[in-house]
Image 1 (cartoon, rainbow, N blue to C red):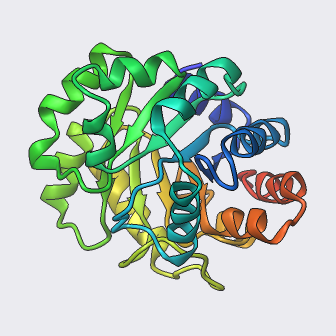
Image 2: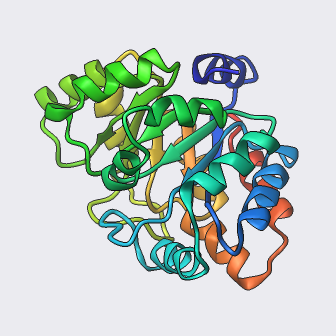
Amino acid sequence: MTMASMFLATKGRSEIALIPYVTAGYPSIPASLDFMDQAAAAGADAVEIGLPFSDPVADGPTIQFASHQALESGFRTRVFLEALAARRPPCPLILMTYLNPLLALGPKAFATLAAAGIKAVVIPDLPEEEAALMSEEATLAGIDLVLLAAPTSPDERLRRIGAASRGFVYAVGVVGTTGARRAADPALPRILDRVRQATSLPVVAGFGLSDPSHLQAITAHADGAIVGSRLVDAIRQGEDFAALIRSFKQATRRH
């Protein structure tokens, strides 16, 4: 299933897409793959996979911890991708990675990702001004290159980000790094509306969404929501992961 068909399906059900985040290799490669399968079985529409990196500038303490643990345990990207290719969770997969790990895969990086079942790639440290060549390479491999839209971006830059993105636009809901927050930012609907006015692509909210009520507050303003740190915390604390996914999915229904 492509990203486009996934968003059409959720729109047809009057829902926004639920996209849970899982750190690759945390707490182990097999366990992270199991959590992806659990997420899909519990109703996730896609899964975002975070690739561990030693300098994750966009990530808060929770995801930094998970990435560090994975790297300390000897995580290797190619080993993970081979395991992912053999598993293929039954929903679209989105990879979130920084430039260095992607470049380390070599000149056929996107073909390697496509072979593992990746449908879209988000690169937080890739600015819109430098995205054209990489987007072309991704498109040739059948992968959507997704750009991030910051809440501080002026309207003209949002339009350029919307024009350069493929699949969807990732709307960063807060100024700062990822991390669970008790309350949703009351400005988030306005941020999402600004991004929506700048692009015809689906708009997905991320950063700081950590409670089902946060998703309920944006169903009229977004096409999808990424839940990250809250789920990584749940894995670390041994919570019922599938039940948590179901609670978030129930909140995606548009009223």
